[in-house]
Length: 576
Ligand SMILES: [Zn+2]
Image (cartoon, rainbow, N blue to C red; front, side, top):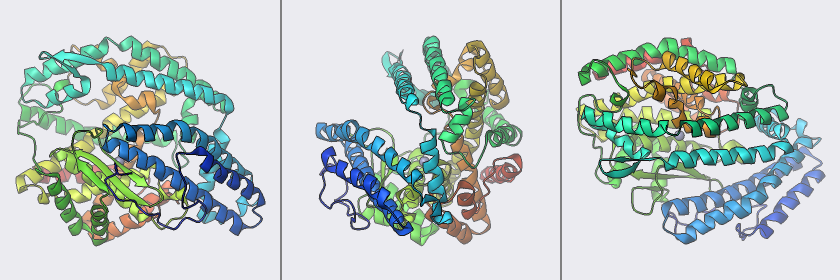
């Protein structure tokens, strides 16, 4: 496809099972491959045959995955191309609904195979555990409920996306309104904040109604699968074998006791820098010293070459990986007309190569993003030699360690982008952002624990539960006069509606990244070696082992967090 920024990429290994010439847009060409795998597993009479069968299945899964990512990349790089959109939708609507049930059948057949338990334990236990979990939780009667859940999620997105306000004579989306909260003029910020808050309040009942229906559905889904409550079901469904609800509660407690004092201290600084008596909700995003935004680069080529220089100083191997991505044109980073918004890292699963998509415009946020996504890309490069498709990706709790560590490690060389003063400011902003996100993660997570362990609660009780969490984790922000907005603040958090319980992963990963960073302060070479070794493991080991390989503890209690906060705080003091 000529719509791709990169040339045709060969498979990492020549195909062995999938034909060299095949049209993945044509189900009749794919179907025989699934049929062959279904038949062949019943004939696997030795462990060697079963392992080869797993590798062939992996080959097919990776080829299908790459086809899907390739079509997605083409579409997001050319939103104005009807051809690219058609090709992507054809795959999602015609091919994936066929492949999904067939993939599930293969999982079932694998789990039922008599030789399965004889596979080498160390090598296959994670794959086996995850596949078994997936098969065991499936309930045919939940399929229709999940479709309904997806429909309600769609309603939430439609409602959120449809909200606009008229501000200064122009209709604007709520996302577009965000930038006014960075304006130095306090009265302007207040006006912008209020108009958005009031617009949301008009829709409170609709949001509540969607959520009530979602809770009911989720409880039924959990019950059908044999669980008392949706929380316990969600933990299993998300493959959380290595931590429990009680560990999450420890995390909430640690944030409250160890991180909140630092948050309050930062809030007090902000208050005095802004020269205001109290921080109001519209005072949280503006630069407290009213400086213009940092300008790390003019041209995207500069962003790439400066990022390359950062990696050159950090580690030869990682630098080589980033250079390779440049050479193969696996970066599409500049903002231009006809590109989808946002940024992502995607892996071309058969070539075993990463691709990074961004819309860089010359802000500090872009520097953070390229370092972050490069961390994900290094993860993909590190697992290239792994033949089992499932092991070439790790659980999200660890994927984000790869990316968030790279933000912290890369920031040590941020002078490639800035003067000394601006470098301090960039580091400061980054570290404050890290501290500031923990309380929100704890709030969103603890709220969902409450929701799904209090079936039959009323809307009033739910608001009260939220407000109690705002008291615990909101810090010193004066909401006087805006009680109702405060009580429904959670309506804007998409994850609560769309991806229940998926959020604490970022807190867990950030703790891992802070530990990698802390290690690098002691011994940079050793910390980087551990980081790279842990990336190579992909998803082949359970989370505690992945963390351990990276030189980090898989714990999120106060004793683990305290030294990390002390270090971050002392760095902030140094930055002045
Ligand atoms: Zn990420």
